[in-house]
Length: 449
Image (cartoon, rainbow, N blue to C red; front, side):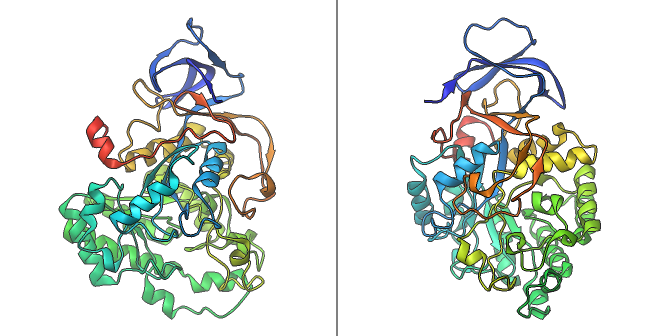
């Protein structure tokens, strides 16, 4: 049984924009007060060591759970357990690579049925905008999805086809009509098709097959559509710094566009990746060291809003297909359990504090999807909390909770890690199922949106 606390007391509690000694009082699943460090408490108190930081739980808005249909790749039990161990207290599940994809009301119901009783942390769902679902997206919106994902180039699975330019325009127009959100895998199909993509183990060849121009062209086209329709749009997993100027200009113009990047783009660079190392393959790809520095600068300047895992696992045989041929290997990085620690370590090396990392990975992600009752430690917020302490850690994939023991983070060493994760004031154990299913429509009823 999970241990329930009435308060958490620490010397370094994230209150507002900085850390301070405080006692966080909890009742009926929410934070009821932020008291002084030595305030008396009637009840059970989790006393933190002076080395520990208390942060809001991470809200990861980009996770591929893959259940039902491809549960051998990942599933709700394993994904949410990994999330909890890594400090993620809420995740939003992508509409692929499950079968069926979450592109219809019936498919959403199948997802919810598969998730029931398995959740360690809270889970919401994205819908999918594919050619066959255009014209019926509002039905999914009314059932509580947080928005709609589309691809502008082949997705990698046949049951989730991409949108061509006229179809993208239809999706933007349709979603703008009910003020929804379109989240976009922005790589241009024509640019990718024209790029060289011979069989090769060389990471440099893989980079040539997914050029930065594919992102630039797709983002320009998306912004043109957003400008014309007024639709709210979000650029997924930005990897190329070459798109930053056009995104900054769009913000200055007043377009409703937000942007995310991922831990693997911030913590690795192409120069580090050995040939044939399929565990590092993702689309769009990890680019060079100078590009990585520019992504960090864009986070600090506000051009990039959020950091999310894009946890996209597969079975070992798919990930290692082709014996290191990076054109054949599955493209996706498994980092759900490691992402917060990895970003915190890299940020610290760059002089960036945990308070800013938390804003990018908790508050801003929560705000993106309207979950303004989490991602912060304040009165009225859900008591989803994370203890991050100075405990050294070397990543052993055999100890990670996600289903298949493959990860780009294998062997990475960190100076600190998540030691406790609290869901609504309860410290979650490895096998506890404390999670709830979330819907955007519930937020409207409770006044959180």
